[in-house]
Amino acid sequence: MNTLQVTIKDRMAVIALNRGKSNPMNAEMVKELHTLVHSIDNDDNIGGLIITGKENFFSAGLDLIELYDYNEEQSRIFWNDFLALQAKLVSFKKPMVAAISGHSPAGGCVIAISCDYRVMAQGKFIIGLNEIPVGIVVPDSIFKLYSFWLGERKAYQLLMEGKLLSVEEALQAGLIDEISNPESVISNAEKQIRKYMQLNLATWSQSKLNLRKDLIAAATGDQTEALNQMLKQWWAPETRKALQMIIQNLKAKSAGTSPS
Image (cartoon, rainbow, N blue to C red):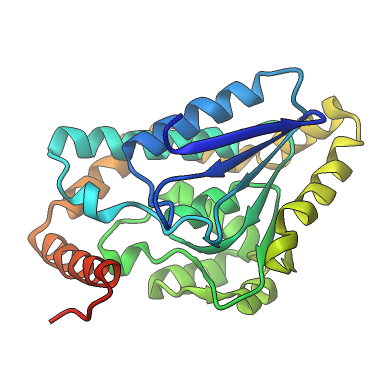
């Protein structure tokens, strides 16, 4: 695995996203995460999963710099794989807790809200879905997932603005469940997952799948129409122009200079 690190301790797996400074998600990371989560879900020796990032970043979301250069075939494959990853995470039958170590916008937020519980580091971090301002059409499956935690009204308003929340705002809105000192994020996530793992696994898992029935149906159903909508807007000239500006800013920040 080039973009992930995994450790297993007392029947609990920890996946640490590990790509660059901010864990931007590219095709390789999406595929590796899907493969690893699928393997853990089917491993009887593992009873729960924590997903975390690195200091200051859970994941900065999709790697727009790399994605921008994908051709049409590569773009279709990527978005199809990303929706498949969401479906895999949503239907994961074992306890899964997000230890959000820092910023978690967009794709990072999708991973976090697929989990059963979220512990987020205290700090000047943001979390939420800002796809619309970037030019990405939000599929119904992601809206359903967001509104599962926030309620439809709040999720709709936040999505349509592309608003990102501070840690304190996220707790108040119900997007996260707990705020932790940064150095205790993993240990606090482990406390929560151990509570789940003490319960009867068959009962817990079936109840989870029952309660997520509508989420799973939305995520695992035919996504062709949603994918076509996303790709049409992704290649629209106004989206490409907006992405160029975003990428210019990202590269300037990375270089430590201000964009001209």
